[in-house]
Image (tube, rainbow, N blue to C red; front, side, top):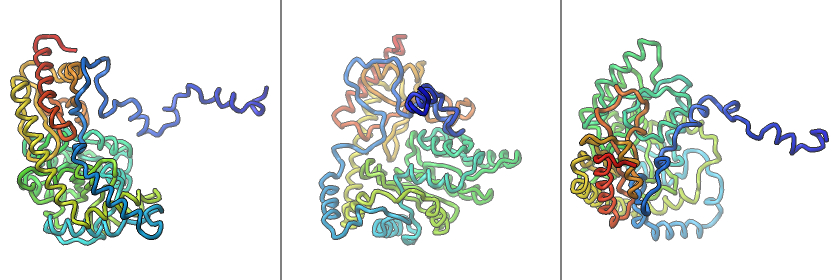
Length: 427
């Protein structure tokens, strides 16, 4: 039988078992065999139902379900089919207008709706930014450690990511300056400096006011843009973080991304870019999808314009402060000889240093066997070059999603795992 008579057999012969690396783009090939961001340790079976301190998402019981449902009902009951159509341009105007008023009120810089582009979450915002600005081989300077998902955005456009370490005050701006000078002297083009300036993922650290001003000065001197990922800036516990860099720079030289994922719900996939209108116009031209989920945008527009956002975020600040304190105190009791950390002033994460002569990877694996999943710190570094890492080994513990009543037990299991590794009984 000829291939013309049996096309299915011809296709099977051609494609079955085909190595897709022959067809994939260079960035895709580089990412194909990298580990997943939240993969558990291989070959480890938990002894009991796992408790998860490994995902940075809002508390399930605190999701504003009733408010979302009421807002969505109003959207679906409105005249016309606008919520069920494509949506083009910068995104749903009432939501952008609310963002402009919210930023003007909370950030002491007057802006209008033309300063905002709505996106599919902050990850979609970062993807749009790098697709608009980065050519293959361009350099992005990233603080280190850093959220590993964003590194995939950068590598997906074939950027070179150069790591600069942090300390307790955030990104080491003095080293940023030196790094840019060295790269420029070697003929490299640095396009972006990436920072999560407030309650950073994974460390929980916040860039100080002095460092923010210094970073703006360094970026201005070298003609490099700052990409400020502000996913957690509103989730402070007691006092707000220092003024945003967009405010300090009076709207110039800084591109900020924000999201409703950490304050309202991750599944909404609604975020935004905040930048001067000329950059927003550029990003709008690089949006090739047929708009966003109009129902989610309009539902959020209803929710925020009804004044429900601020009280909800206030409640989340109190909740996450309480969960952080419970987790921190429990870890101090159960694992204080092996984990050292500074409690953050906001956000979702603890970043303990592993001490007492035990290894972080062994502890990570043993924690999983004891029934608690956390994140291995090594996965948050842009490269494996030891000179770009802090001294020591780390874990990330995400407490926001874990039910309040499970936090003490999770810390107890971590303590058991620490003792096992210390005794040479690791998984």
